[in-house]
Every structure is written in C-alpha cells, then in structure tokens.
Length: 142
Image (cartoon, rainbow, N blue to C red; front, side):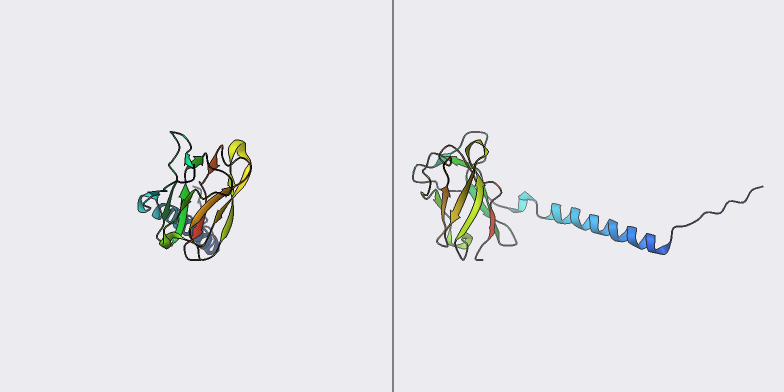
C-alpha cells in the first residue's frame, strides 16, 4: 500500500486568502449598503426655458445621500448656455462655486456651474439640445 501525504498550504497563504475574501466581502457590502432605496430623489423645478429631455429619461432631479453627497440625475434641454436651469435648496448647496464636466448633445462636452447660492447653470455649445446631469455629485456644504 501506498501512503499519501496531504500537503496543506502555508499559513501565510491561508492568511492572505482570508484577507482577500474579507476585502472582497467588504466591498460587496459597501456597494449594496448605499443602495438607491436609501436615496430620496426630488424633481428639480426647471425654469428659463429648460424642460425635461424626453420620455424614457429620468426627470431632472437631486438627492442627498447619508454621507452628505448631493447627486444629480436626468436630462434637460431647451434653455440657453449660462441660464439658470434650476436652484438647489439651501441644504443641498455647495459651500463654494463648482464647475463640473458634463455631456451634452452628440457626446460633446460642456460644463455645469453650481453656485454657492444653489443655481445650476449648464454651459456649452450643445446644452440646448441635450444636457446630462447624470453622474454629477458633490459634497453639500463643502
């Protein structure tokens, strides 16, 4: 009869694998713990000729998450570059003016100016055709 020896991995490898599993599990938890169900979206009151982009797109809106980060969403059209599209409530405003990159009609770039007074103003040559607010986030009061 043959004798078989089972060789166990080194303790260092076991510890490394446990650390990796813990790190991956922690990331999965972080990704699911900040689900959209904890965010309450409010529709923006559009003005100055700005209107929702089209049906099938999220309405222009904003929400503040539990970490105090304000998120914008939706698509708008119809206004002119540099005109105020909507104003954020005091609790959801940045502490200083922000200029953030955005996508506009046909994938061209524009910028979104958010004043410390909460005015949200799209800038760019194609903003009247389409302005995306999706992906814009900033810390309230920062």
